[in-house]
Image 1 (cartoon, one colour):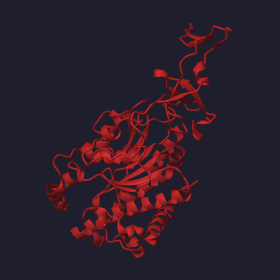
Image 2 (cartoon, rainbow, N blue to C red):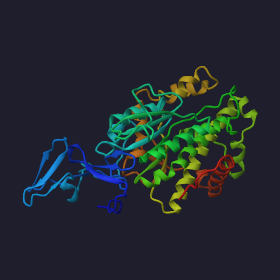
Image 3 (cartoon, one colour):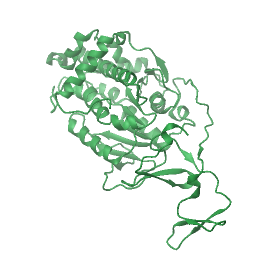
Image 4 (cartoon, rainbow, N blue to C red):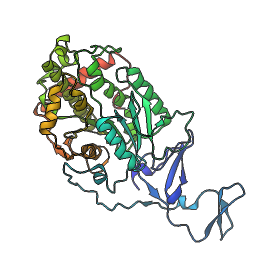
Length: 419
């Protein structure tokens, strides 16, 4: 038993579920989870002592009777005995997966059943691939997007209409990254439910277009808000839930475009965060802006990881993952009719035709849920790689952190990053 399991928060009550699994019910909300609310581990009951037997009373409740002293109880006596850990058939050691590994192969024998994962942008492309793969493995998915996923889903519950365990479900709720209030509303609703967050996966990106409005209703550049500010806001508002969930992770889904960024020092950051109209008027300018937003996203993630490590906070652990070539990316599909024709050509020149969306998603779930991924920060598929050379500039990383936080804090009141 680890430190997390020595205590159980007063609002949680232990119960017994099917299969002799210990489950935990929140007395305030009625929510039932199958993992310890602090440690995140599953626990199984010991065998029933010989002196105890069970009966069903006239109300359908299970009554336990002690044959030695005749005592009776509606509480399972096994809850007072030592619990057993679900055995893992795979040793928890560093494993290597190639570029064709699938989600099920990466998570084989990992205890992911019943975990809670929030996917920002889980209705198309790699996000939809992640959603489909994780649902099959028993993960609870909360999908955030403007349009619902093209698979069976449930509306995200409120504290008033949801009292039981979600089991393994796909929940969807409306969230428009161009309107930050929808992000705030979701974070407030989620916090009231009291669910843990095992991982937040940021799987959204927007290609700059010459015809789009430059500013969002919140006053930020529209491309920067979708790719950077809104995802960061979501993470900041849910940081307290991530810190309370053992082994929680944040995964920023990136791409090789970040290495084409022309940001070299602190002086280059503000011009990217406040791009000029002329940036959108040329294909070269739009390509450069997209590369710079992906760089800033990963640089901010790197700064957040450093900040949590300086405070000796165990969780969440922050990663960036480039899933490799994605043959079914919506960006590739839209490139044929937009100014991003070069993106379409690049796909046919470099993308392997044998690689499926499930293989592309494997690296992301490796970072999000595999228990042995600890030290590295950025991954290409399932392989750790070095951060871009410019990210070793600590002044640059510090400036990215300060500039982005200052811009957001000047727009709204936000909780501190670290409690």
